[in-house]
Length: 225
Image (tube, rainbow, N blue to C red; front, side, top):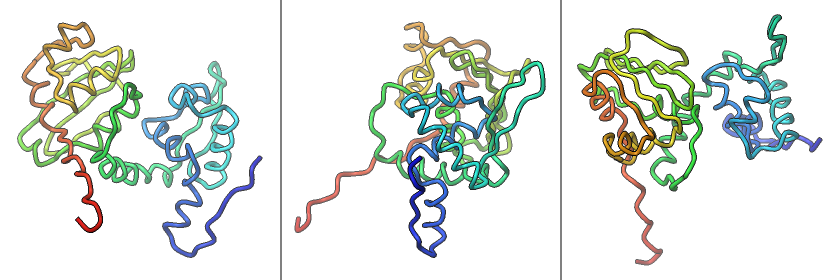
């Protein structure tokens, strides 16, 4: 195992990077923000991380107190990884990083389900949600989520509901991401067969206005211009 690298700097930010600054570490945290996962689930969410590197990051994060390993009772009897309360406090850190980086976000052909859900929790605008009160069921790559908007707040968690105002289903999460963040028309996505919508269409249209992207970062002027 490669030795752990430290900054040996008394700054708290440097210590934070000692704990979660290694490659894949914060993405492991991201994958666990919506609940516990098995090692195989983490591999699915982080397909470009080798098993050895992923195992090492899990050990390091467990040693740091960011996550813990727990064995499920029978009949499952499998081990899962979950964030500690302290580890879960990293969500606003990831949200701030996400908002900051979204100004120069490159085009991507793939986005994971957890990444998309967490991006919605990140980009939600309480100001734009004033007066909106609704529940929308999402089924993204066969994974159900319940999105609730009310009193200027937004929550989106794994689960199902029978009281949704509308249901949005997308086999590929990229289809919903395109509608939500790039302005791809809902009707076109439905016509293309990549998105289905049931229930109150107006509820979905209202929801689409609640996740504004920031202005893209302009190219810096050359020195001396």
